[in-house]
Amino acid sequence: MRIGELAKRAGTTTRALRFYESQGLLEAQRTSNGYREYSEHDLRLVREIQSLQAVGLSLEDARPFVACLRAGHESGDSCPDSRAVYRRKLAEVDACLERLQGVREFLLARLAFQDPCLVPEPKEFLCS
Amino acid sequence: MRIGELAKRAGTTTRALRFYESQGLLEAQRTSNGYREYSEHDLRLVREIQSLQAVGLSLEDARPFVACLRAGHESGDSCPDSRAVYRRKLAEVDACLERLQGVREFLLARLAFQDPCLVPEPKEFLCS
DNA sequence: TGTTGCCTTGACGTGAGCGTCAAGGTTTAG
DNA sequence: CTAAACCTTGACGCTCACGTCAAGGCAACA
Image (cartoon, rainbow over all chains, first blue to last red; front, side, top):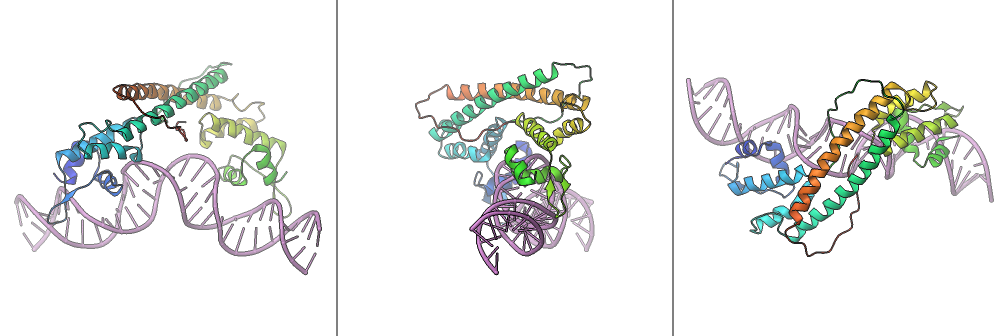
């Protein structure tokens, strides 16, 4: 399949896929006219990257997972380097949770004095 | 006091202070040679901004607090706009906590299969 | 033939909060 | 007189994961 179809099937954009390629996360065959040609395995790679991003991992963090899949493993997180990324991320998340708990208590304490107002709906969210 | 001393007393840099001024968060008197001259009240403002940043608020979020102090209130969070920022931030933090809990459980589940490795120390932390 | 819809590379823009020069003026100590 | 240590404005750099043009080639359909 070509880049447009891959993007559509993965729910992303051609720009993102070309960016992954520029970062060495994705490779493509080329047809005679220079178009990129992708396989189902490439779709698998893109989905892996997306799921890693969903838990807050960077594209740099995704490298070992991609390498693991390329090495023939059935899942990207069955290699030591991938698991090391998981552990580092877990430590980051734990630290973040602690910080946010502190922030939350601070905000509650500051709001505790009075509070007669309308509640605005939040739009964008922070974090990992 | 001049900008260097204010930076030192606030534990920040001259660049940051000039940036705050460019964002309209800080104003300075000028001496005859063009140097910025700050008062203790300005130091108070900078400290307010820093404490807000410490809980993950942006400089944009800091505006109402600064305005509140400038309006003569004894604390920056005693004005309605400031309290609205607190409430919005609290909602963001709550949402973030939920997300991170989910991420944490995902990571734990993924790591639960095997785990015979050395633990790397994390260096930088994410979040608000 | 023309139009539409793919595809290519390349390059600049985005946001947040500054860091880091560059090029120069001012003040003070030696 | 000069060097050090301040100060000024202006402008570009940085991170991250792309978005958004620009300028053009390729393929299919009317």
